[in-house]
Amino acid sequence: MTIKQLSGLIMPAMAIAMLLPSCKGKDQGQQQQQAPELAVLTVSEENSVMNNSFPTTLEGENDVEIRPQIQGFLTKVCVEEGQRVGKGQTLFIIDQVSLQAAVEAAQASVAVAQANVNTAQTNMNNNKMLLDKNIISQPAYQTSVDQYNSAKASYSQAMANLTSARKNLSYAVVKAPESGVVGSIDYREGSLVTPQSLLTVLSNNSDMRATISLNEKDLLAMTDNGKRSLNEAIKLMPAVSLVLANGEEYAHKGKIISISGVIDPSTGSATAKAIFPNPDGMLHSGNTGQVLMPQARNNIMLVPQKATFEMQDMKFVYVVNDSNKVKSRNIQVADENDGQNYIVVAGLEPGEVIVTEGVGISVKDDMTIKPKK
Image 1 (cartoon, rainbow, N blue to C red):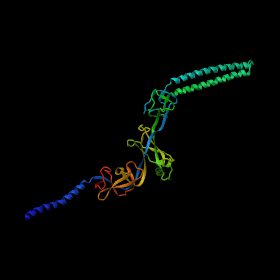
Image 2: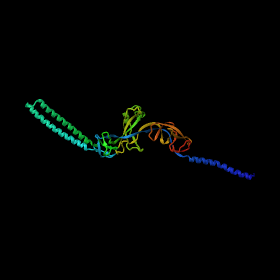
Image 3: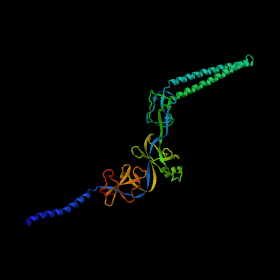
Image 4: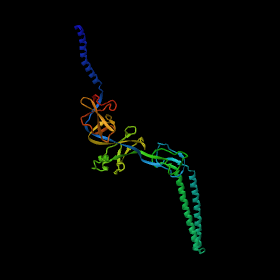
């Protein structure tokens, strides 16, 4: 091989050798540029007010079951479901024909009884004069007295029957015992109803009550481990919030008004009641939601729930190391949470950095990221 040929082979080889480091550096630069920019959070201990969440079903301040007091056929339903009615307003009308006939029959019986009383009284008075003249004996006079007393008793009975008949007639018109909102109506015109029939439920929903269950830990936290009574704890408690079924927070704050001092051994919980104003009638009996009860917590580590993912009933976060690589780590959290954050009780240390964006979607173990704070 000539020198000229050898030179032709060496020059391309040197050019390739010079290009290799340059390409390698370019690849590394591309990898760095491809590292996704994700939001991170530096974990720290802090004092915070947590909203403990408790499921609830709302009910009116006073829900009244409307039932007929007599048996009969409905002739008219005077209201609609969801209608607001006032105290004394007519809700239902039951057939009055037979009831009116009973009143008229009772009135006739009263008239007959009154006539019998008048006749018996006249006989008694006449016999008294005859007795005074020794025309009749004392037993004969006593008989007329007894007949008069019997006629008066029959009159009293007839009056009682008339009162009962009139009362039954009044029961044919079912009226609202108080103001409220009409619930569901299962009976319509022509239906046979009895005193056992539930016509509707009238809900006085100017204020709504929310019942929640508290466990022993909740009660101990409220009473500062028993240092104050439940009544004192209720007075010191801040306002509570209501999250509706659609996830939105109700505009008006509520107040805890009572806490049962007895823990149900079957459930391990006590019952608390909160009351929420309902000036616009937006809330109805049967609505569901979550009562948020604020509670001050000191020196706790909070992580956003969106920064966690679950696997086999365990919670994990992605921790970012000094090289900006992420690694999943199991954490333990407290039972209570506000629906947005978890309280970390083990698995993280203050000062560590976790990923808060793309968790459960794009973030993977050993991925290199570009932290965004």
